[in-house]
Image (cartoon, helix red, strand yellow):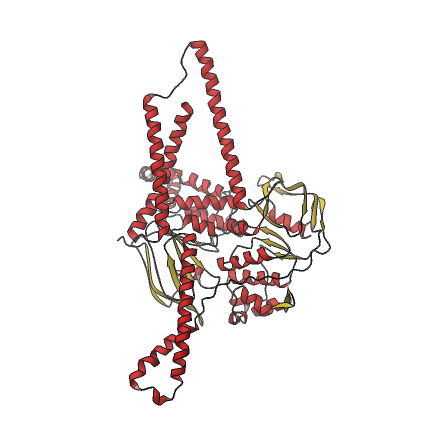
Length: 638
């Protein structure tokens, strides 16, 4: 069995009087891709920070394989503000970046001492292409001004620079904390493919469930200070977690029955408890603990009655909006957000808004809310509309206020309909703030818990039109599941701006796709359907181009044949045999790929077999793509 890259045994961590996790153990093997799932405030980011040496722990051991190189993307990365984007990417990229820096310094030194040895090393390690690869990765992450100081970047841009830094590093193990935050949908899909093809080991925290399903071969769940391991992707985790919870609930039920009987026995007179029965007194405490446990699943949907909303919601009447900015050379550049945009929003509509960063999604929302005036046209809002806005920027809370008071300042109760009412405490409990946590001061909350609290303050105002701008950032999966159910039952209107594909599929019934330069598509379906539509269109275009390319050489060949008497190019016997072999190879590789994917999700592989399978899958994918490309080349000839 190979030595694990990372081995953690019996790790315990407390913050003040609060226990985050106790006696947890985990290991990550070579090539293994692991996702960590937990509710906000339970210690996910703390655990990652402990692993990379940024935070102390109470007890336990953390052992890395000797010489292991680790790359880490924190939730909030930091760089010296004067560094340029390219310098920041090089700054933590390991020995290769250091080699390039030494080469650059040598060039600027009189006499260039040692230049020959450096050139040989640059060639041996293929360092010449490193800067080009860095710029390619940055471009895929929508960072194109490579010489801009990082001090001038937004938080989202800085996170993407740090992500590029980690991806380009020579690390054997990559640790990522919320890598999909601040990525648009296209970037997320690209990153998913990048990590899926990589042979590096991976440990990451993310709420993107499609990402977890497509990339990870192991899921770790941190719950009730305990770590549970599942050898498979997210779909496998859901199946096995349901079985675990059912088994634990059955165990709790049995423990409660035993507890009742033991309690009756313990309450008897002391004379009844002889020395011979002492073992029952000791066992009673354990039974009592087991019976007190509650494995609660939020199966009860929160059906809140929204305020009455009329048939007139809002109408965007030929709205236009553009911004003018200056580039580094002082030239003015106009960015068009909307151009003569018309839309009539329907009653009870649930719309998703998607598009790349900078295409105007948040600007559109701000104009709808009246925070930003359009350049031309107008928004006509219905008289009964009452907006509830969950902003991407977050909310400024009074740090010394208690959690429950932050919600009560908006309302004490909200109407559920039928004479039923929901208190602020009940709403907070539903959104995973237990009564004890509701009495804590806000300054004690994690970033994700603050976002959850912000969501509760919005819902407590009982709006009939919810606008959620990037609600999935920093929210854990458990909260997202509750929010999804809430929005599905919500008797009002919803607009969601999000890069979370899973969330959009469950909530939105149609999309506005912001394509940039004022172009907006209205698509009647969810995001997966939109993506399938785009892929189908792309295939149609590629097929049309292939036919056109195939037709053009045919015309040329016919002309040459007429003029010179030459025969058109045909497949040789050897090429025909090669094409037949390619078809057989592709079928074999596809079957092997499906079997590997099934094995990785089975949870039955040993660590050694799991490592071999994780190595083989990206190599197999690359081999398959090469054979498909060669087959296409031959098919165009014949």
